[in-house]
Length: 67
Image (cartoon, rainbow, N blue to C red; front, side):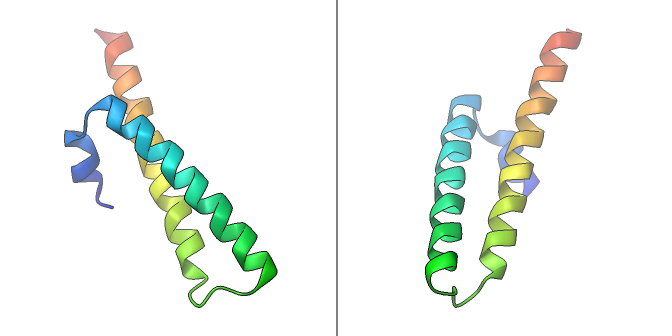
C-alpha cells in the first residue's frame, strides 16, 4: 500500500484498516507456525503496511497538535 493512498484516506478508515491488518498479521503468524506459508514475505509486507498506517495516524496527530 502506497503512502499516497493513506494520505487521502479518512482517519476512521485508517483505524479500521489498522485493526484489520493487525488481525490479518496475527492469523498469518499463527498459520505460519502450524504449517509454513507459501510466501512468508507476506508477513514482512503486512508489518510494513501496519507501520505505514501508524505513521500516517501519528503524522495527523502531530499536525493537529501544532495547529
